[in-house]
Length: 339
Image (cartoon, rainbow, N blue to C red):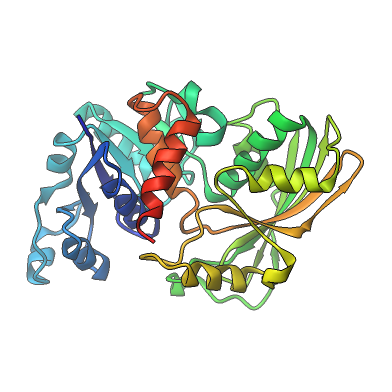
């Protein structure tokens, strides 16, 4: 029987998670919840997703806007097996009490504290350990990107030490109230929170991270320096390892992808409902190896990279797949059919 999934919060992440869940044959989307009318609420109805009113939302406001409402958040939760909380950052913790009272399993996002759930989650890294958990937290976009790369490099070569600088976008494309900024803003919290967040997945990983904010909305860039325990045979060996691993996309030199603008143009050209890049994006010419010192750039599409991870978190929670590789293959297969 398909797992009944509801999505609380239908913004940047929530609407993508809802679309992804709706495409999975072992899951049923019960509905989505929003606190106020918006074009996104109208689109949810157009797509056939039952729309519920969340939190202190005004049912009358939805009706005045001509939006058909299926009920309240509490009613949506009662009809579900799991709720994916995609509400604004720091809201999930406040919602957790309601989920507990309703006896429903929650999945939270990376903007919440790691203490909000039994475990932090990344499909390539700790799927097996997360199987059967009553609550999970899918780590943030940047942590997801590092965790995927760490899962690969730790298994193939071992990782002695990792240093990363996170070049962060200032805002998502729709967040006109957050920018643009005319400057580069260093994050003076040293180290940045990304390294400690990665350690909620890999507690023994020696990693240190810094972050700066730049005036763009497209993607994040990671500048990685990794000291490996076992030197690869060649840089080509590393390139092939990345290329042959699910959820990594490598551009070749002749493709003329100079940076994030061309990455997102590629995403538009390959089609789909949205121009998303759910993979870690790397460049062959942006990978350098000197002995056991590996350096590489990777780009992270903050709007979409965690979406397949939420689907895999549902499978882990309800033990719908024996391992992460199986779940990832199923998720990616059904997401690819949308293109």
